[in-house]
Each structure stands twice: as C-alpha cells, then as structure tokens.
Length: 100
Image (cartoon, rainbow, N blue to C red; front, side, top):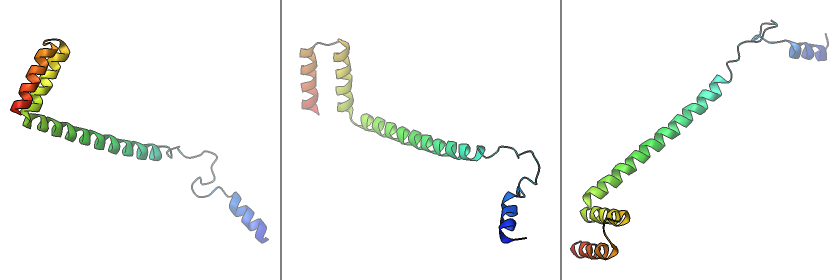
C-alpha cells in the first residue's frame, strides 16, 4: 500500500468511539456547555443577591444610626402625601436643621 492509500484509509476509519456501527452515540455533548453556562449564571445571580443584600443592610443601618435623617425622610413623606402644607414642612425642616 502506498502512503496516500494508508492515510486515506486511516482518515476514513470511523474511529473507536463509534466502533464502526451505523448508530451514533447519545447526544450528551450539549449537556456540558449548557450546565457550564448555567453554573456561571447561578454564580453571577448569587453574587448580585449577596451584594444587594449587603448594601440594603448597610443603608438600613445608616438610616437607623441617623435619627435626624430618618425624621427628614418621614417629614418629606408626609409632605408628599399632603398631610402637611409647605409652610409647616419648611418650619419643621428648619427646626430639624437647627437641632441637627
């Protein structure tokens, strides 16, 4: 056999993974890239959740440690809801600034 014929025969051989049968193996190959992608999506979502939770706790702790800021927030909410008018809002805000 010549070298060209040997190479052609080697390339035409189906290989040990198919053992020469007419039926191809199960199509498991998409499972691995899909699960790899889902793993990294889960890592990203978990990191986002933990960072979001941490910043929310930090903001809540900051609000709890600043009573004047909390009072200004409540005052602004009451003004936005129409419970107090602008004059009363300004007067109470000035009193908060004076005390704070």
